[in-house]
Length: 60
Image (cartoon, rainbow, N blue to C red):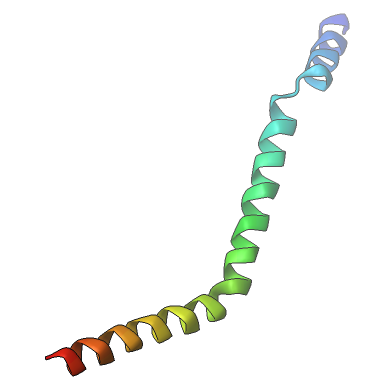
């Protein structure tokens, strides 16, 4: 019985699990920001490539 309580105390004092959860939350936040910014990035990149294509066509 005493060993079980010592195991529970040791588990509660460890910080590895908390760091893992923090990294998972950070990753989820970054992924959410990427999804939210996706359409704007797509529009900007399409505009840049269209301008490049038009300039190359005019130069040829």
